[in-house]
Image (cartoon, rainbow, N blue to C red; front, side, top):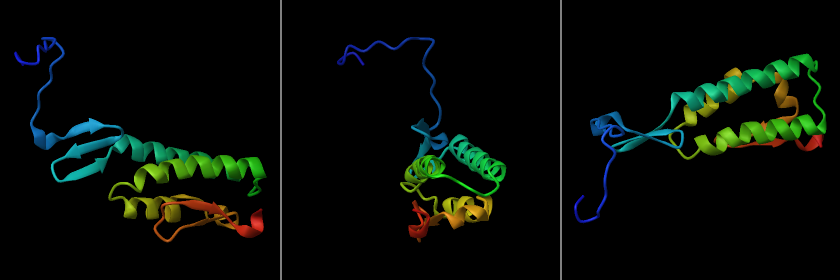
Length: 122
C-alpha cells in the first residue's frame, strides 16, 4: 500500500473469507465457480409471473407490441443466465413457470437460451 500511495477509509473496509465469494454484476464469484445471485433468479421469476398475469388479462391474445416487449424482457434474462451454469434453471423457468399459452406465439431454442417469435405469428 505504501508503494501505490493508496489510503483506505477506516470505516469502509469489509474483509471476509474468500470462500464466501464476491458479489459482482448479479453474480457471486467464488473460487472455481460463478453463481447467479438469488435476487436475479427472483426477479426473473417475478417477471414471468407478471407476463403470465398479463396474458391471462388479455385472454390469451397478444398483439405485435406485446410480443416485442415479452421477447425483450425474457431474452434479456436468458442472455444474462446463459453465461453461467444455469441450463436447468432456464429450462424450469420456461417449461414449468411460463404459461403454456405463450407457446402459441413463441419458440425456445434447444439450450433454452433464447426465445423467438413463431413464423406463423408474424
